[in-house]
Length: 103
Image (cartoon, rainbow, N blue to C red; front, side):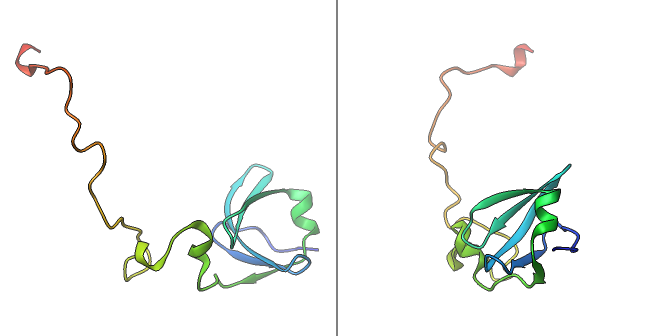
């Protein structure tokens, strides 16, 4: 039985399933978690209290489960930046022109 208070951003290990997950949101009576592989799951307060949990550190490769690789991360590992800042909408021109002097 879990006596751990759910905390957003904290990682836990479910001893019964052997899974590791992070709490990503708490909304009223629901606790939303994201597993290492990127799967999202939701627990109600009663289900949470039935889990056998231990607080753990984030796994080293936890971003791989959500589709991020080392190339997606900066050296400080905090901010995700794309390799190419251009967008497919960059070359689109508006169909009409608005003369702001009329307003």
